[in-house]
Image (cartoon, rainbow, N blue to C red; front, side, top):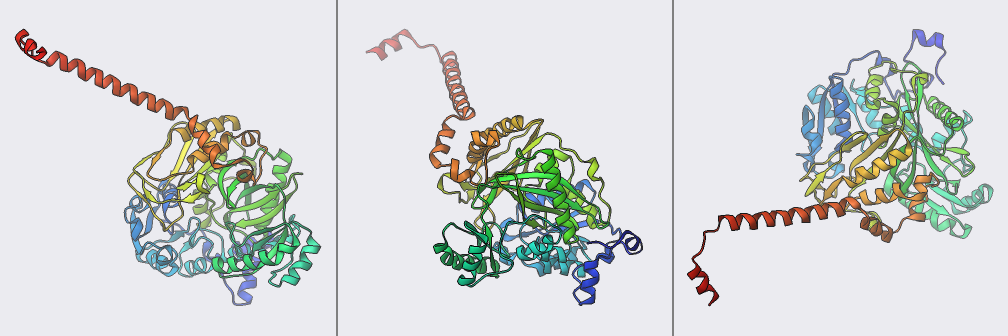
Amino acid sequence: MRLSGAIRIACPFITLNLLYDIAFGRVYYNEITMKNRSITKILIANRGEIALRIIRSAKKMGISTVAVYSAADSKAPHTIAADESIYLGPAPSSESYLLSDKVLEAAKSVGADAIHPGYGFLSENAEFAESVEKAGIAFIGPDTYAIRTMGNKLAAKEAVKKRGIPLVPGSDGAISDPSEALKEANRIGMPLIIKASAGGGGKGMRSVFKTENLEEELIRAISEAERSFGDGSVFLERLVLNPRHIEVQILADSLGNVVHLFERECSIQRRHQKVVEEAPSSVLDPKLREEMGNCAIEVAKACDYIGAGTVEFLVDENKNFFFLEMNTRLQVEHPVTEMITGIDIVEEQIRIAEGKPLSFSQSDLEIKGHSIELRVYAEDASSGFLPGTGILTTYSPPSGTGIRVDEGVVEGGEVSIYYDPMLSKLIVHAATREAAIERMIQAIDNYRIRGVKTTLDFGRFAVNHEAFRSGDFNTGFVNEHFSPEKLIRELTVNENVFAELVSGLALRMNLEKEFETKSKLSAPEMSPWKNRETKN
């Protein structure tokens, strides 16, 4: 909760949480220095498509950009696109992009006055954000109090509970003892889901449908959480069956203004990770949209949030919604929100980090049309979405009205084993959802990638499926509707591929015919005697 308006006039950048941290010697974020600082050079602590995305907005604002790169990315598009670039280390991210000290030293060495972490890597690392601010450099993201609070699912639930935010019934704290887990399971009711407190991306997560399986799955979840996050604490929640995964984008400035930019539907997932997103959701009516938007704003206020953030919810079959988590960074799928609102979210992030107010209010926002995004991964969907590597022998993205491609690769580039296999994000926008679906199918058909297998064909299958078209789907879409043989059948009806083959064959036949005609015209006239000799 923020200070009263009267106090904030005199001290507009101090919050109750900051005062509490100062009193106990735990100053996480130097909000006092946020008074209209000017950002002239941004170091982007990331790579690939998100680094290029941030560079575009920064250049539009007249801000210089600095890229960091590993040995594998010395000729990567983001390295070339930035005004300056600094080498971090060998290809593994643990020896380059995750080295917070090296990233900070790189920023100091070029005189950068801000660092944008993008998503992944150091974006939700509270210690990194704190060290950046202590160095007098703006961290383009929330303060460390918010990162820490929302970065731990148990702490996040405790913070939002005080504001009456609807929560899925579950355990109040971390559980490691099987007997305690059994007591909680009997109280909460089956089925259950075990979640890692510090987790994300489906790691440390186990669904339990029978109490006799609880102990075994608990041990597995704890072990995976320890390996993935260095924190084995887990908790139990009732498993919401057939849910929709819907998230709300929020923006909050340091002056106390908080708005939501409507919702994104993220229910089509593989391994608990999103593949297709859209905005707005087909399941929300105006009343529910307003309720969830206001709820997301309350979640942001619960941790004095500053910057761009995403509040995630589960929506059950009866349209009851429950708080899931808050991501304290720019989301991969932010483009669909930009497409339906016209707001440049990265630009707003930078303005907020300068201490400026939001450039719009809630009443200025309205949904314009419909947008869909497909994450184009170097994965083989027919083999369980197995990641692949290789050289992009062909890379030709689609273009045209209502088509946007946020990419991090070029033709001839290598897809390595060291990083996330996402090549690009294909985003479309149209006046209606039906038109957006057709535009997405056309854009997929015009996307040419060779050298690695991709999720383009799966994306075409997904958006063209009756369940997606009708809006009657949930997070179980892949398990319920997808199988490799369906993908193969989808490929056989790709009219563009067939037309390309026919066109190529016709062109070859015409060239051969033309060559034959020219050969006859240019050949010297032969003597009848020569012909006679030939016949004999």
